[in-house]
Image (cartoon, rainbow, N blue to C red; front, side):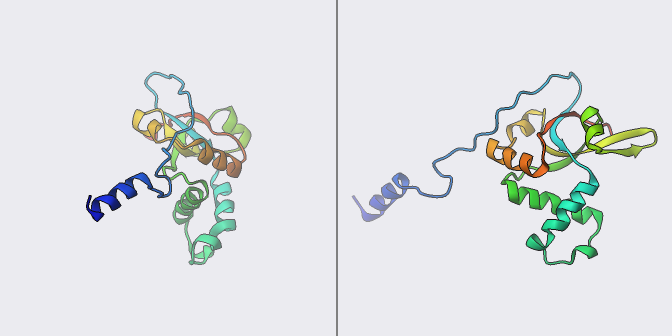
Length: 161
């Protein structure tokens, strides 16, 4: 047996790369059935809370002075910081239909004339591809600890109003 063959056999048996032996296991999550509607599994958040979060973590992640940034930059920064803290890279924003939870958390905002929406920190949707990329239980638990409440299913807000 050549030394290259011996080395290759050894590498395949002793693969110690980070995460090589463990598969990513998404959290267990049932999807409610609301025909014809896209659903988001998400945390409802307010722009005000996101700005407070970003301002407290800004210096740990970015070199630009916080005061020189706009709302869009701060929202993007919030996603980057939350992704880094949770280990979940598919986090994004979405809009949902207000409900009792959003009223209790004061996260409703005027989306268009006569209609309110809810800003969501989306973990996944009810669509198959997105659902398959939902977070692991550990990532979800870290996010729930940061946000301070559990995520829930939200109906997608139609932004064509």
